[in-house]
Length: 137
Image (cartoon, rainbow, N blue to C red):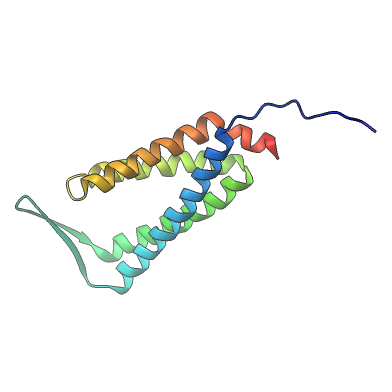
């Protein structure tokens, strides 16, 4: 009988990559719910900001959120399995999310900054330590 151990080193960041996968699952679910509610809901979404009025086409916004939510959910599942393509797509989705949140800072500043911080954490975890998750399997 052999008493060999696996000498590959994995840091605690593999758990953060799993965290990123779970956050993508939750974000995808919320995005899909937002998309469905926008498609089923009223004809216009608006926000008043310092005397300005921002109007959005709710149907287009709803479809965008529904598609992006589904893609984010599937990416989160694949990221948990250690797929290389999921790491790439997760980074792209986190970058898109951060850019969208920068646009929404005037409407919801605290929420936007929190989401941007989580997006940065996802990007770092996946880029710097995503390979370790694949090697650990």
